[in-house]
Length: 104
Image 1 (cartoon, rainbow, N blue to C red):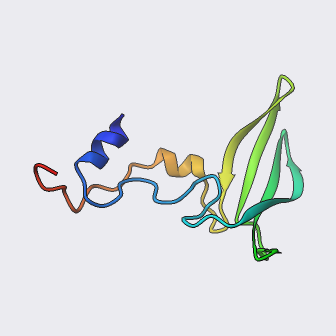
Image 2 (cartoon, rainbow, N blue to C red):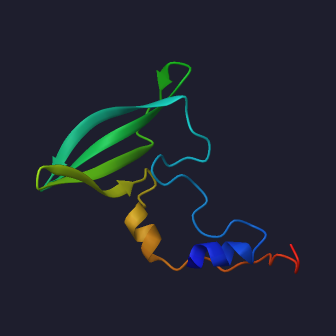
Image 3 (cartoon, helix red, strand yellow):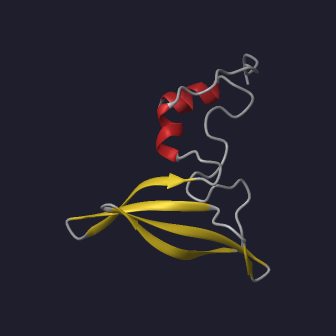
């Protein structure tokens, strides 16, 4: 609700401005799961964009999952620049710099 209210008052996009699950603004034709590794009780899988039949050279995002009561659950999405979705969501979002004119 807070996000919707903030966006209604602002001309530009407020908050996350990319697809946090695929780490992109422009989705690829398809995606492939690459190597899966174990890190303690969690597993990580590289997700590769595939365009024109060619997968990207490095993972666009690494998913982190955990098995709880025989169900796999996503716990985080790790990005190549060292950031991750959980930390991004914990940070205060930037303030609106272009308020929407009244009546719009």
